[in-house]
Image (tube, rainbow, N blue to C red; front, side, top):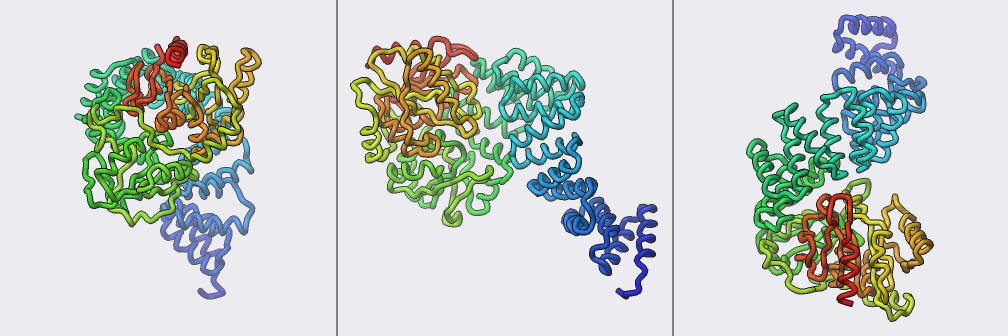
Length: 581
């Protein structure tokens, strides 16, 4: 371009084209201007807007970054930059950009709402709570503010609080389907099933083609103790929508929880696809680039190199380990992913199998092995379709399949206070998705604590967001009841699972809620008394109301007598301990 080019004339021409809505010509002129002056503010500013209109998002980012070097930042440019990042699914940079806007104007509700939306995309739910709450404070009477805040509270399992804001939102928009559905979910989560069912019936009329209200209605019936009717409803849903992930997964769970294993395993693999739909990293899709994954059908072959993949938490992996020996008899060349905290324990317990540690970082699983070494993959939770088809396939007697470190067991034994009493390990909290239903208060366990000839040892781990709460409970119990629960302070019970297993090995018996400790106790063959909620929060593999676990014969299961109430099951556990010991 010649040096004597008239930039003012070109800019005026570009404005004329913009006035005539001929954005292609305007874009071409601005690009010519930038060839002459690559940092021209007006050309950069107008061109970034045209790029945004033309969905040229990478160019938007590059152009606005240059613009911000030559002029003081303004909200409009940051807003356009954030829109481009969102379109590119670059949510981290979008979040930083919205925070830049807030520094300029900290009282703009829409920015907090958009920031919350972006934080949801990267599963930063705690950040989203703060953002949506600020938007609500700035616009307290707006439907969207109440709805967004209620929605994030539901996701974070604060259902009682969520109901307040969702009901307020529904008063503003009485037929808002998504809001009604969230209210139904929250009512179900706090075991208000009759009210929840009313909501779902109304949704069925308002949205006759929607299947989710039918699925959620079936879940309410199942939580109330039904089986045949929920199964029938889900089968009808799958006639209309055979690929519906939630219906398939729930149908599998209903069958498995009722010991109908052959039918259950047919549907249970759908849980992987359901989670993959929500997984920001799309790990399942990534894995399929390296090997085929055994899903829905039994397709593994004897001579294949098989990798067992993580699909759930520590407890479910330990449940999978209970099937590993039998699975290994069928397929000789297997390796397995395990949570890094289980690595040493697994290597010691199953020396003929290769284990690879997996860590989670910002909801992404970090591995350190070559995926291309394998022919097939199967998830831990799917092993049962090969080795647990009938009741006869489950272990008949108490069997320990995890080998704790004997040296650690002895070190702990020597440090524990010498006693003649029976040593009972105690764990009473769960921090899992349905943890509120599985968790008890220490006061609830008083009938057990009052037994003579028993000392109690704390096996309870803490969530990183709940540090110190269990100590406060124990202090209160000692102060008010003079009941002491000893603690072995040299172990981080959340991180040091190998050490926690050695600690549990020193116990004579264990009393626990449904959490990782329950699986550790089962895997060690320890006599265990497990208390579980009535329906909601009771995991499918704790089948019987009161009876021996079919997965871990050393575990005796005690089920709460009603919704939101443990009833007298702790007295029943105390009576059983006294009778046996």
